[in-house]
Length: 269
Image 1 (cartoon, helix red, strand yellow):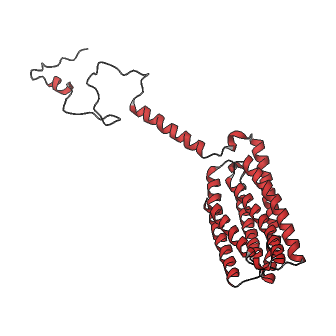
Image 2 (cartoon, one colour; image 1 turned 180 degrees about the vertical axis):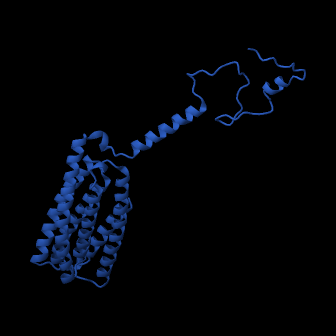
Image 3 (cartoon, rainbow, N blue to C red; image 1 turned 90 degrees about the horizontal axis):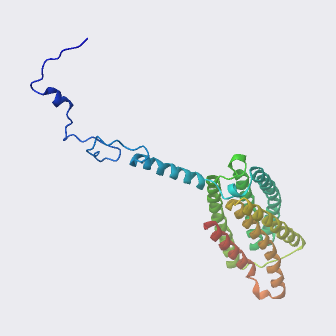
């Protein structure tokens, strides 16, 4: 069977099938395609669209690597979970110990009008809050290497550090302005010794775990415990200096101001 077509004297078929050079076909990169239809594209060559897709995939993979801490490549999964549990145990112990020390130090600060005692008590409360943030940080086992959760914890810690430092500095300046003299009794002596020893031990353990887990939040919590230990010993130091030289009555308030500025600087960092 054949279909006989009438002759085409006007050349309509040529007009229908001939490409119009005035019409520019769009491409993936917004440029006109080359006018060589007889040359087929090679499969091995990458077009700009494929190159863009490959660049996007590389960016996505880079962002996925940045969302993990360095501990993800250093620790095995069971090791990371083991250190996470240790961080939780240390944080709970720190909350209990520093909460008891905070109550005792606030009592001493009210009874003896000690700027260093008030500074230590405020730092102990700060230690409780920072340990609670570390508990939130490592509450989820799947987020042990999460850089995003680490960043959020560090931001909250930084804000708390700055606010607490401002309170310590204002209280110390007030005590210096009204000339508050340091006094030490057996109760204050016991609180100072216990706080200095316990906070120093907690600081060492927290910093060690923070380095293993590459956790800035845990290291910051350890730094806060270290400041608490220093302030605990500074209460005894200022009292002993005042006992031998009453003219150096301002040492207690000066140490409080110094510790406040140190906490503020680390919080800003």
